[in-house]
Length: 261
Ligand code: BJW
Ligand code: ZN
Image (tube, rainbow, N blue to C red; front, side):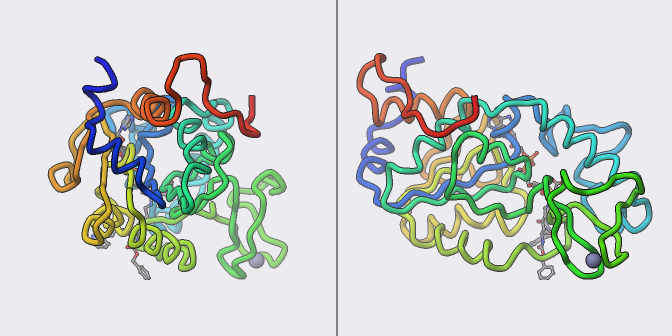
């Protein structure tokens, strides 16, 4: 399929004339790196449904189980690489006066691909936090001799991520709302758009007059409401969009940034 058929003239025109771009990403962006999504068919870990493990209730009942799940995911993430979708988004960052990459992902792959203007809504798997005093640790410095590991204050550590029923980090959330509210163009990529409050960001942008485009191989609850819903994989669609918009010939590679090789 030629790029002209994927991207409408209106989409390309609106993107070209936009001063500010906000991007919302979800687990689908890391799928092509080999990181399983939450609600996909490959989503099972042992006999557990991942979305049911991400709660304080399960952690309180069985901290070992939850720590084991996060250790398993850390090992997995550590061994994978950012994919063309992550790199395409990092190339977009300096093409706009205002840009914010709002991610629900906790894997740190956007950073490894060179993105810098990031709002991590659901925390980061490479940090741990004390349940008693809130002190935050770099996971690599945590002694895993005892599970759950302990803080210097004696409290138990948990992954510094946001579970169901927990508030999102206040400042990061307001930064994300502000960006969704004031942008000219919003791209929502690889998210099922089921989990709040992240799922309301594209709708907020729409209400404020932004052009909203979704990239996902499957339809979502917001597909019918956005301006355009492109059914495709992030790692295929995003690099083509960046190339179509900013590079006219095949001779140009994406702009090189300080990315990990
Ligand atoms: C591809 C692809 C490819 C595949 N290319 N695409 C109404 C209003 C407000 C809140 C609620 C509400 N109803 C219920 C709630 C509560 C709840 C919620 O939203 N529940 C819904 C399930 C109904 N929300 C919360 O609890 C949030 N907190 C909250 O509301 O607090 C209120 C409060 C305020 C003040 C004080 C106290 C409380 C917190 C939500 C936290 C979510 N946490 C998790 C775990 C993070 C840690 C971890 O990773 O372990 O975040 S759950 C999980 O879902 C994870 C994800 O970030 C999040 C979203 O999932 P995502 O990214 O969309 O992934 P999938 O798997 O769902 O979808 C992947 C998509 O990719 C699919 O569509 C595929 O088709 C696509 N795809 N391959 C592009 N190659
Ligand atoms: Zn502590």
